[in-house]
Image 1 (cartoon, each protein chain N blue to C red):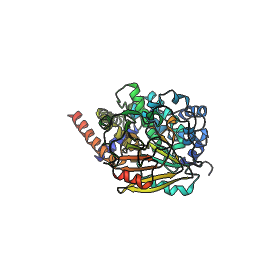
Image 2 (cartoon, chains in turn brown, purple; image 1 turned 180 degrees about the vertical axis):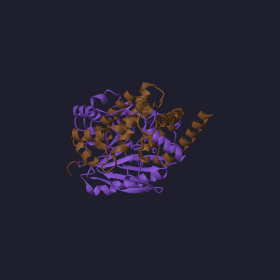
Image 3 (tube, rainbow over the protein chains, first blue to last red; image 1 turned 120 degrees about the horizontal axis):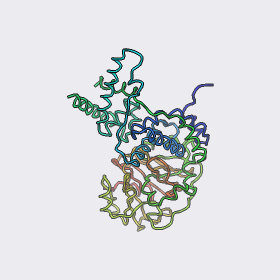
Image 4 (spheres, rainbow over the protein chains, first blue to last red; image 1 turned 90 degrees about the vertical axis):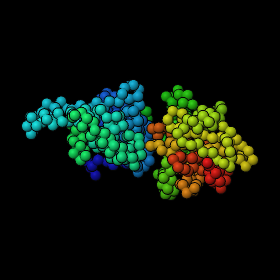
Length: 186
Length: 270
């Protein structure tokens, strides 16, 4: 048992009894996906961190209402998404998804060749611009599925629609993305 | 499309995501200051937290839409099967708690505030405000009062029928029959029922749709907000209740009547 990460359910049970250390382990476990989820909604790093922190805190306070046996991550991500959407509304900004290519990757580096690397980076930037031209809900469902690699259930929680409609929404978003790419290329 | 999906996944791996350093420590600090998470039924019975009490209760009612009955899943293994069977009801959580819930600090003032029903409106206003058809029990006719629980987003309507022959005044609501209609297509539960050991939960069906009948000793009942948090000052005890899904709605009848009569009212909804 030593060294093996504890199950969520054990950590949740302990956190429900007020063991903050246990909750901190849960936060560690899901910090990245929470901040990233908030980020694709609010678009700014600082707002994403604020929204994720607020969401984790609210989730802690609501933890006694968490149903034993259900999955923590989708539940958490729904709280994160709600918090991020509130944050976005408060900020009064249009919800542009401000994705940036990492500088070190854009500048090139290891394999294969600097030129191929530069081309790949350029291709990614073009795709990103097309994604950013999409309407908000299309962009969000694409970000959930392909950038954050969330499950269908988690995506449904984040975008706020039934599980059964995630696939069709994703497929429509991809269709529109194709149009956006083609349109930009012409 | 496969190629596009592959390119999107590749893009996802090259995005400049924000870091999450120190998040656990920051959340941990706040959690230690706040103390242990309180169980629903304790939270409901305790005085509202200071940051909540600063809100007008009508706002709280408007921001919230769930109902709680009292319980503790873990403490009562036999209740688990019964409860699992009811989880199929959209918008509702049922829990068992180890003690029969006691009455919380009761709200005062007009009916809408006392029962956390929100703002009183006319039937026509309620119908115009919500995106679903408001159903009326044909056996009772038009309600005496109508309330809109959440005009801004999670719209729900409460119909009040005053006591009359065949509908005695309920000790818990002070009215003859209270019918609440919630839109069921919500992502999170907006009702939670907390049942003590003496409350019974019986699975029923209304027009072949799932539901249940709660009777026996009174149960605790509260609204949950959109994040699933209990809205503190909406806690109250509730008497006999029939709750079921109908179409996209979650419907709830509370009245001091028997199961058959409640089912007959439910069956007459149009």
